[in-house]
Each structure stands twice: as C-alpha cells, then as structure tokens.
View 1 (cartoon, rainbow, N blue to C red):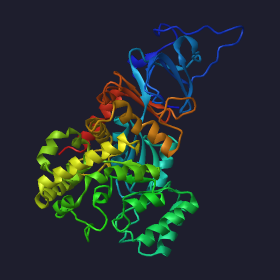
View 2: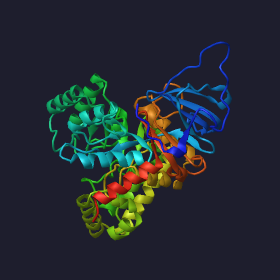
View 3: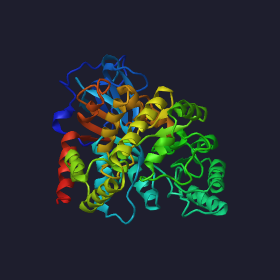
Length: 463
C-alpha cells in the first residue's frame, strides 16, 4: 500500500495529541504497518445528518476496518496516523454521469483527466460514453496501477441512428454484457420497439439501462419499463405538454418558444408521482444545461468565470468556445432562460416529492471540467432548495447505495474513499473544497500534492 503524506499530517507513536487506550490484560499489542488511522477527527458518516466528534477511523486494504471514539479505539502499532483535530472526514463524492477518455487519447492526457476528479474529491465515476479501452482502464485503477476514481462503466451509446432493429439491439446488449460493461447506455432516436428490445434483453441479463430518453419513447414509457436513471432531466419538460398537444418533431433550440407555449406546469405533480411509482432516479446535470445547452452567456464570460479551464487541452476548450457561441447565435436567450428556470422548478419538485436525485454533471462537456463541475452542480442544488445534507447525500450514500452498495458511507466494511476537510460540509457544501486531502484506493493524497499536480497539468496545456 502506498501512502502519500506530507510531514505536517503525520502523527507518530508518541505526542500525537489524543489518548490511546492501553492494551488490556496480557494481550500483545497488534502490529500492522499497513493501517492508516484518522485520529481525533469529526466524522460525517452520511448515514444520518450528524457529526461524530473526536473519533478514530482505521483503514486497511482500502476498507474501513474500525470506527469509534478516540478513547475506545485501539490503533495498531506501526499504523500511519493522520491528525484529524478540528477537521471533518466524509465519504468521497460520485460523478454519476461522466465521460471517460478513449484509447485515442494520449496516456498523459488520460492520467491528467482522471486526476482532476481526485483533486476535487470525486472518488467514483459512472462513465456514460463507453468504449472498449475503458474496461482495461477500470482494472488498472482497481489494482492501483493507475491513480483515478473507481469506475462504473456504461456501454457505448445506443442511438436510433446506429441501432435500427430489435435483432441488432439484442445482440449489442449481449455483447456489452460479455465485454464487462456495468450498464447499457441508451440515447436519442431509438424507436419504441428497439428500445423495448434493449430493455428486455438487459433485464434478462441483469444489466441496468440508463441515460437519455428517446423522444419516440417518451418519459412515461421509459419510467414504466424500468429505465434505471433519467439523465439530464431528459424529456421531463416535454412531458409537461398535455396528451394530444405534443409537437410533431423534437423542438430543438429554435422550437423552444413553441414548446414553452404548450406546457402545463400543473402536470409537474404527475411527473413526480410517475417517477416515484417507477422507483426512478434522476441525474440532473443542471449546470451544463444552463451554461452550455441553453447557452445565454458568451464564451468569453465563461472563460473568465471558470479558471479551471486551465486544466483542459487547448483543442477541447476551442471546441467548447465554438459550441457556446454558435448556440447563442441560434437560440432565443429569453426562451433559454425560461427553460432553465423551468428545469429548476422541476428539480425542486422531484426532490421535495422524494425522488432519488443522483449527483452528476456530464463532464467533460461544454465548459464543464471534470471534478470542478461537481462543486458547481452542488451549489446549484442548494439554490433550488436542497439542504447541504441532501446535496451531499446525492453524491455519497444515495449514489453509493444505488450503484454498488459498498461506498458512500463511513461504515465498517465500506470502501475507504474519503475526504478530509478543514470545515463542516453540513454547514455549507462549499466547505467540500476546503480539503486537507483525499483518500482513494488505499492512498492518501494531500492537498499540497494536489495543488502541485494541478499546476503541472496547467503548465502542460499552457496557451
């Protein structure tokens, strides 16, 4: 196990600032040099909305081995100790809709890309644009060969352009299962019968299917048939149009006004109930939609607003600039702002109604930088009325329970993907950015190391 610790964080066997209980009886003290101990830390377990003060958390082989009050928790001799005094320990965050590099991306760029997640406390990513190279990438991360977030992999997108028959749909789903993908990614344009074939085959194989909602299928059918997540709030706005008044063709940017004229917001309650009845989950990706899809601010404003752009390749940023400015020329800003505000009202209603919300941003997309975008997304969720605890839960315990059940909480046996912070994240989600360090895959990376690596990444992309 590799431990990256700066000298200021290390606590040695004597003088570490809190009392360790004496061994009882004649038992020989345990010796274990692989254990990492967070000592005298305030634990934010995310099992409930509370903080356990002055606790010790022991980590062994990337899992939480023991948790308890300082005075009642024995630390093995030889363990690496990390001072938690006045600090807060919470689970790492999850990006439930991210895009991952393909085999064509240079190795250095891939490593940089993965580090951006870690640097921002994102320790798990559900990749939603699969390709075969990601299977090997996932294994390299699992074995510690490569530093990065743990990966849950979606298949290559199944679109109506590429998948046109039920036979093709069934064969593709089976091939994705055999290849080792964790879920099937569905996208726009699928015909209803093809979508049904995807769903039926996925159910037979025990694979979730998730992503977009084809306009030919519609939100209610996608929920009824069991699509596991509706990403981007896809088709929720369109579902506000009463039956019989639907547009003949998807509205696109130019048709936004016509769509807005037909919606009936009193149907929001129906959407909430339908989602609850289906035990559906939503990955909102709100910030991307407001800054990129429903673009109302020119690229020069976004470039100034988002200094994290420095950590992306020049060619990528140039494409983003072109995309935003082209959308602004094409769309009506007033209609785009109305749609953005409507999406916020829908998200608030879904949350207030008890629908499962999963933190996700669709990074890297238009001005949405991996890891950094998570913090912008969390801030927006608080703006629509979600409490800091509910926002954090969407990226920790709710996401962890939804995906694999072995991360997202500070509990015995859970994966020890953790964030050590200088301030309580339950007071303000912005405190998640006040990092002391990030623990992932058994390795603790200090904030000093994070900032050093970020500077190196920015230098490699200097414009």
